[in-house]
Image (cartoon, rainbow, N blue to C red):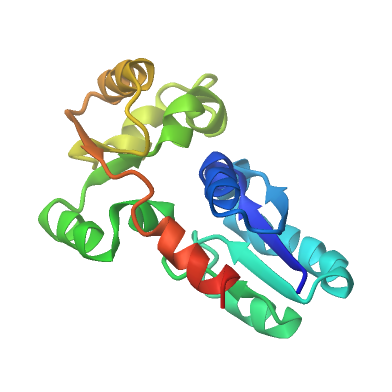
Length: 194
C-alpha cells in the first residue's frame, strides 16, 4: 500500500526521525511552517497538495493539527479521503493531551516554544510578524502572556540558551520541559500502521 505523509515543516525533523527509525515505506511532502502566520493558506496549500497526490497514493496522512484553520481542514480531508493526526496543534501533541490540558488550565497565558520554533524564532516570529519593522507591536502581541514554556524535543544547550534569549526578548520567565516526541509518534503510528 502506498502512503504519503503531508507534513507541517515545523514537524519535519521529528517526523523524518520517526519514519527512519520505524522503517516505514512512505513518501514525505512538506508544507511551509510559516503558513501558520496565515492559517487560511494552510487549507489552500493542503488542498492543492492532496489533490495532486491523491491519484498516486492509496493512503494520505496529514501531519498537522487544527492550527487555526477554524474547522475548514476536516471537510477537505473528508473530500479527498485523507486522515489527520489527532490534536489541535503540535504543542498539544508534544506535551501530550493530559499534560497540555493541565498547563492550559493552570497558566492559560503561556507562550509555547518547540525545537523548531526556537531555531526559527527570528524568521517566523520577529520577521514573520513584522516586529523587526514595527517593534512597538511586541507589547500588543505578547503583552498578555505570563511565561514561556519550551517543550523541548531533544536536550541541546545551544537551543536552551536561545530559548532563554527569546524569553528575555519577550520579558517573560522561561521554563523548559523535556517532552521528547510526546504523543506525536504514537498518533502518527496509529494512522500509518493502520
